[in-house]
Image (cartoon, rainbow, N blue to C red; front, side, top):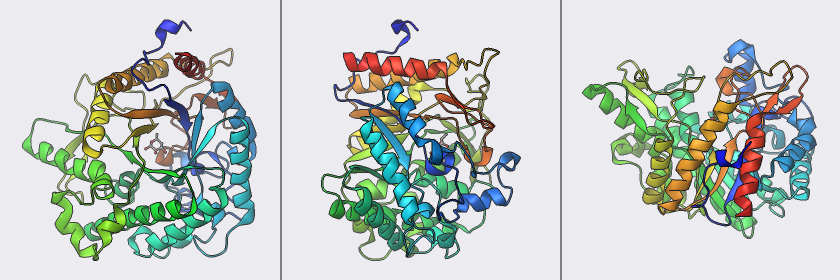
Length: 445
Ligand code: FCB
């Protein structure tokens, strides 16, 4: 691939970090091995809530193939790898007795990464809550902040000698919105929805304190999914719905965590759940802002939905990925600028990527020029934002591997590496080689 097809990286810092991201439930498999307890996602799968009744039981079998996966990362040339710890693997009941074989798995993974010269970035929560805690009300129970602090303490004590980069949560707004408002899992009331937002924020603050205390030199953040929310028509109702979703999607977590206040429009709903001192407990100093970004979201007013909004039609002519997500690199540049101006923290882009339905050709190769074009455009937009003063310090592609894409099961592919789920064979796609070239070229500058 000619180097001319690489975007400019001239605006990025010399110590810019290139990485890839994954998460535990999406790749590990081995859900019933070595003492792991069930997570809420095991239960959703058992209940047939996932497309094709897919489950995470095998996934990419990373639990057994992590060495091969670290070798892939080494050949990709990434400096950092973001993964998550499965809470029910290390604490099968969510609290109480730790599970030594589960902890030992992450020891092996971390040691393998360090031996390969790849920095581990550990995310504490990427959605696989222990079912035992969900049975106690999950995030709707105020005690969840204490459970999370105890779990954080276990992870920090065990791995803090080798891991310094910690994220508390992946996309708190997503798992709250999708499990309690706009998703299929509409199981609760508006009051509980706000209650859970506040408890997750409290858990974040508690975990930051634990990490500071237990891990000297820790570099800590939370990972937020920020996407511009745009009305899907010119109606006033859609504009109001988009403004409302923007609050819950983009600000309900970063504002209290980084500024110590909830956005004004949600204050009266959240107030009943706030106790004296809570905002100070939530707003603990962090070192960076983790940003996940994919595309703008089009919103429509929906009176029957809990918060008055739903996803709307995308206007005609908007370019889309094969899985229907709008492609708009300028919106990414704009999001970076907004994060920079709103929160003033160094930014690490910890997810960005392209989903499709890749298939190997007759020769077995997986050729994905559209993913390359997407990455080129988005990295180009990030480079321009950095050249214009946005303090962005790293970029991680979602994802190293095709994997379990939540409600869509294995039907959507985001990997730089193709996974054949029957044989579990990994085949680097053309985008893998392109990203390897980009990293090499950028680092030689
Ligand atoms: C993000 C999730 C990640 C993956 C990508 C496609 O919202 O954090 O697990 O599903 O979307």
